[in-house]
Structure formats: C-alpha cells, structure tokens
Image 1 (cartoon, helix red, strand yellow):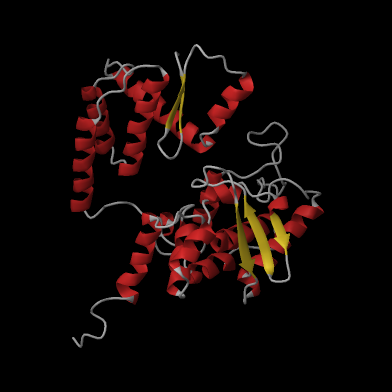
Image 2 (cartoon, helix red, strand yellow; image 1 turned 120 degrees about the vertical axis):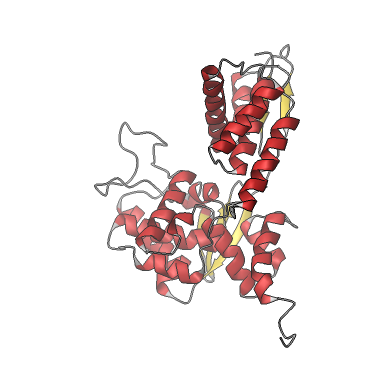
Length: 342
C-alpha cells in the first residue's frame, strides 16, 4: 500500500505521502478519525465485493467500470436498499484509493442505481424510512417493560432518554455517566462527539422534567443510575450489556468494551424488540433511528421552533433530513386545502 487513505462521513479523503514517516500514534488517530461503524461497514462491503468477483472470475482490484456496474445490478437483483448500494460503491472507491489504484468509473454503476430506485418507486417501495416513535408509541413501549428487572430499567431509560435527546443511536451508546448532571430544572447532558461535529466541540443539551413518571426522562434515568450504582458501576458507560442471567457488563472473555458498553446496533435491536413486544403495527419498521425521527416530528407538532429542534438534536442548520421530517407533519398541519371549503 503506497498511501494511507481514510474516508469520513463527510466523504472527505485524506492521503499521506508514503515517503513521510508517521508514528504509530499518528496512524492510529488517522484511522480512528473514521467512525468504527463506518470502517466496519466498508470492510464488510469490500469483502462481499471481492467474494462476488472471485465467483465470477473478475478482478476486484483494479476493478473495471463494467465490473462495478454488474455488481450494482447484482445488489439490485437482491433487492438491496439504495443507501446500501451507495455505500457499496463508496467502499469500492475507498479500497482502490487506499491501494493507490485508480477507482473504477462509477457512471454506469450509478445509472444502474438510478434505474433501481425507479423500479422501487414504481413498485411502491421507495426510500425506506424508519417509523417514528411518537409519544403514543413511546408510552406503549414503556408499558411492556418490566422495570422490576435490570434490563427493564435500562431499556426504559434508553428509550425515554433517547427520544428526549433526539440523538443518533451511536451518540446514545457513547454516553458516559460523567456526561450527565442533575439540576433543579432537570438533567444536563453533554454529547461529546457527533457525526456533524467535525471539531469534536461537543454540545450541551438540557432535558427538563417530564409530567408523567413513567416517561419522565429525569426519573427514568435516576432509576437506572441507581441500579448501576448498586452494582458498583459509577463511572464509564451509561447503557451496558445485560446477559440472559441478568448480569451486568461484558462476560470475562466476551467481545466488546470491558465495561460492556452497548453498541449503536444493540440500541436498534432493543428498540425493535420492544416495539414487537408492544404489538405495534409495522413493529419491524422501527429502528435505531426511530427515536430521533419521532423526536423531530413530535416536538415540531407541539410547536417547537425548527432551529431549536435542530440544535437540540445535533442537525446542521438547514438540514434537508430534518426538513423532510417537518414536511411529514406540515402536509397535514399546514395543508393548503384546509379551510378552502370543499
């Protein structure tokens, strides 16, 4: 490999001249500037691409434009989501740059992807969106959790506070006990890093007391922190693994961090599992993103200013994603036909 190339969520690529010496710590920091989840996803995408090439006697590196287009068509035949295919194209491109090889021209591959999107739209299966956790849904989910158990206490706090923060699942999983401060007004939370915070400046979020004990973010979090303290867990991760026997944290020889911190993927599993247990319609459509989307739609529906919503949950000002969620509310709340007299 002639250069170190990493790609971050902003699609930026950083290259280092191979003649320049880099210390191990510098190399490690360059590598870790890309979120672990992104590195893991790209590695999986590249492995699947090389396996596909091997089965068809095609060269994965360097790959031709035709090979990439055929692979995209293969993914479309497998009914993969367009976002999944986009990431696969990015993974192939990054792998070539990492190996100091010219990436294949993606024009034909993207033409195939556009047609796949059209086919999905014609079949009534456009962009897949996470189903939002509304207040009604939130209450239904909380009601089925057994808070007499450690897992029930954790899951209630995770769902309620995850909704209240409107944060990404990776940011929720990254919370430490030291990031939470109880105040007279509620709870102050520090989000140390986020996808849109490239400088790692962090953001401070104020969470006021709720009016219902079962869904009050302060009281649900206090109950969970008290349970952690009973297990002598007073520092480190807020949300941790609990095994089938009710034991807290990672098994002695288990995978993951030593304190048993949940992953972003585990957050999504908990949300979907609770939705299924609550018997919600289309429960399988609930994902790790459902809390964030629900926060946006419910707070806007209640009259919150879009700018305050964005800054609370860490969207960039003018975020098209947030605008789309607001539009979902406005198409009914501010429908141009209202009051016409039909």
